[in-house]
Length: 148
Ligand SMILES: *[C@@H]1O[C@H](CO)[C@@H](O)[C@H](O)[C@H]1NC(C)=O
Image 1 (cartoon, helix red, strand yellow):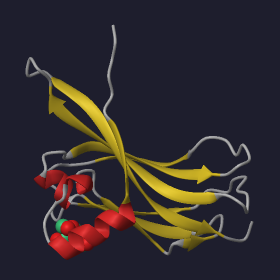
Image 2 (tube, rainbow, N blue to C red):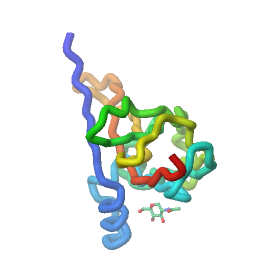
Image 3 (cartoon, helix red, strand yellow):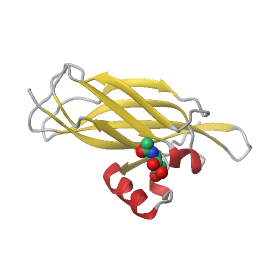
Image 4 (spheres, rainbow, N blue to C red):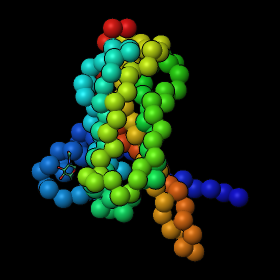
């Protein structure tokens, strides 16, 4: 049996700007808008992650759960993403924000990599027979890792 997964990625900065300027929910904001504070972090440092799911809810992509990762991109092999948090989401949350505080895990970060915090938004959608299927979309925001 074949299983198709819908997987979308978008750039948070662009979408945040588009939402702020237009004042409505563009298609690209359908998995939420993620922000972190502060954005410059050293290993072990505490920081806050907020995913604004207003547009996800409005465009009918209310998540059932959210996985958060640290992603790194480098010319060197730096391994896979690090799981930061796995959270369930209650559709009745008001306002529709998922906010939590965590610490940057101690890890083998490298100074020439570009890092980001990514959220994978898992949401249910009816298939052709009306049976619910879970699909996933992701969105990320850049961070700078120092002290490595
Ligand atoms: C969440 O996003 C919506 C839609 O763009 C916006 O109106 C609202 O102000 C945002 N909320 C926060 C707390 O950023």
